[in-house]
Amino acid sequence: MKRDMIAVIDFGGQYAHLIARRIREDCNVKTEIFPFDIPADELALHAPSGIILTGGPKSVNDKDAPLPDHGIFGLGVPILGICYGAQVIGKMFGGIVAPAKKKEFGGENLYFKNAPFFEFMASPITAWFSHEDEVAKLPHGFKAIAWTGNCANAAFADAQRNIYAVQFHPEVSHTHSGRVMLANFVKMICGADESWTAGSIADELIAKIKETVGDGEVLCAVSGGVDSFVTAVLLHRAIGDRLHAITVDNGLLRKGDTEHVTRIFKELGVKNFYAIPAEDLFLSRLAGITDPEKKRKTIGRAFYDVFSMFALERLYSYSIRFFAQGTIYPDWIESGRASKHAETIKSHHNAEKLPENFGLALLEPIRELYKDEVRRVGEELGIPHDFLWRHPFPGPGLGVRVIGEITKENTAILREADAIFIEELKKTGEYDRIAQAFAVFLPIKAVGVQGDGRAYGPVIALRAVVTDDFMTARPHEFHFSDLVNIGNRIIREVPEVSRVVYDITEKPPATIEWE
Ligand code: XMP
Image (cartoon, rainbow, N blue to C red; front, side):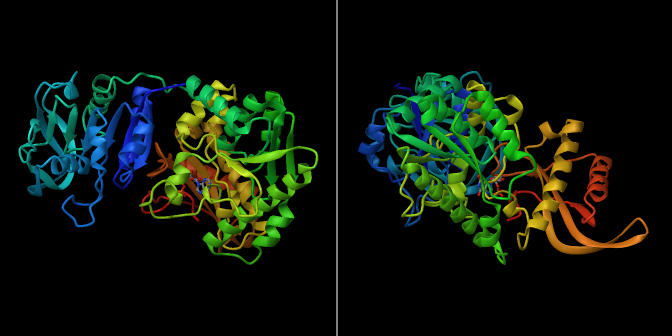
């Protein structure tokens, strides 16, 4: 299926993904993110309906400033430059970009003229700025269409050539009607059709899988989380019983995970499903390891070893040629695979390269989707709502939630405490208001008194965050008495635990997981 697509050219930071998500969500138009230096003829092959140049941390006047191939301006499609992207347009068309007389950081009153970009809006509005440079002299053929008290060229355009540039950030929620501006650009100026809907995404992914897999068989790793589950169900729709879904019971899963997944697969008619017991293998490899990155790598490696042992065993009777996993966009961002410029914060095991001797080709059907899109596709596929809306669970599982050494005992304590926490959240309805909640095992001991005796045991930390995109997050604001009740229940029912604490750190500076 040929669908409209907006190309987002990434000049660094997280802007590209925010813009891409907004357009997908608000306009139902596909977006793809490209590195800033993509050659114009390569971009032309993707046939974008419009191009957006994102913000970025550099100054266009820096020696090493990232600049796009000039040829992208000759592709004949509308272009929108945002912040740094606006300065790129200013500079590359012959204007002058210079340090702003007054740097703007935050909300400013924006006054604008009638222009397609500002359709359905009344001047002025509050727009969010974050810039040190500005386009001091407009290039030939461009006219200012918006201004603030400090910035005469807050937005400028060459309406003939459909090139628009805005010094502020329409993609952030602080810009009033920013989403309307993006929609105006995408729908009115680019004329893009609403073809990125859950039903059409599912159809396209299924068709792509059929084409790639041919008559081969696929091994799909299922973790108990939403992404891998949706991947498996998509594969099942595409290739039926040539799907072999496996879940590895590595001793690092939540209470009841394996049983839950088994039941839903059964309900959905997935015949070839295997739960592989591998707790001993994982725990013996993890023995003595306390470094978070080392743990992640060890767990990742152990997974692939179990998968390849399984595939090898079955290769004689089946022709398994592909290995599928549920990698999504955000996994890529933070593991540095999506952008040349992103720094690796944590290695997500499912965003790592496959080991060289793995022997199976990698299939990542939902690698272009954001979490909310995965859920919408899942709903389209008939996966039960409450399963789809489970909080995310990381690939390395409880392995990154048992701080310090991972032992069977510590993991069992954590599993019980976590199950109580989640059960309480569901009971009060709080679960649906939280994006992700879990317990963490801390390897420090604290003194307490239980009954008449002295207690001396480990500490459990509770983490519950609200977030739209998991890139930034805030701690959930509980009623204090609810938190105390949860803590009390954990202490009562998991006697090893001496204390329960609540993590109030935002992301950034913290991450959501502790390791
Ligand atoms: P952080 O801790 O980086 O987490 O703020 C952001 C989101 O990603 C999840 N996460 C992972 N998911 N494999 C995954 O599939 C991983 O290795 C991994 N590490 C973190 C985390 O649970 C949160 O939802």
